[in-house]
Length: 112
Length: 116
Image 1: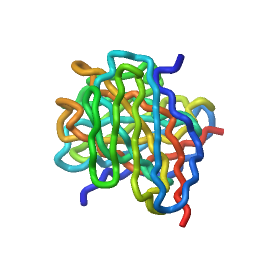
Image 2: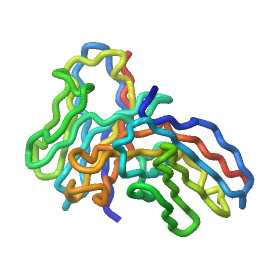
Image 3: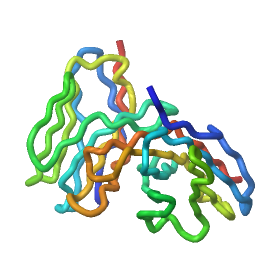
C-alpha cells in the first residue's frame, strides 16, 4: 500500500460549488498535514497545514484531519475559476525530518 | 515578493551526458532543497542542504547526483551521467530555517529535464 494516496482526477465543478479534495495515508506516524496548490508550470505553493486531528479554516479553505481513519480533506467554498490547479496533499511525522511525503495531486477545474 | 528562480526552464540532453540545473533561492533563506516530479507521479524529495553541506537525502539521490552552492546566490544540482529515467520536472525550494513544519518551503517554477 502506498504511503499517501490521492485521486488524480480531474475534478470538474461549476463556479460557486463546494469542492472536497481528499487523501488517505497508511503511516500512523504522520502528524503534520499540508495542502499545496500547484498552478500549471509553477512550483507547489503551501496553502495551509494542520497538526494532528481537527479542522483549520483560512478564508474559503478548510482543512480537516481524521487520524483515526487516516483521512484528510481540503474543502473549498464558493470555488472560483482561479482555484483551477492541482492540489497536493503532503504529510510528515513530528520530530526528526520535516521532509514532506506528497500525494500525486488532484487536478481541479472550476468552470465559469 | 521574493521568489525562487530556476534556470533553464527546459533542458534537453542525451543519455549519458552531464547536466547542471541552477536555482537562486530567496536571499535570506538558509535551507535549500531539490525535489523531482516524474510526469504524472508525485513530488519526491531528493536532498536538503544547509551550511554548505547535505543535511538529508533520499534513496533517489545516489552517486550520480551532487549539489553545490558555488557562490552566495546559486544552488545547483548536477547529474553526472543522465539516464532516461531522470526525465522529470526538478523543483528547487528554500526556507528560512528548517526547525519545523511552520517553516514554509518556497518552491521555484521547476526545470523540465528531458533525457533522450
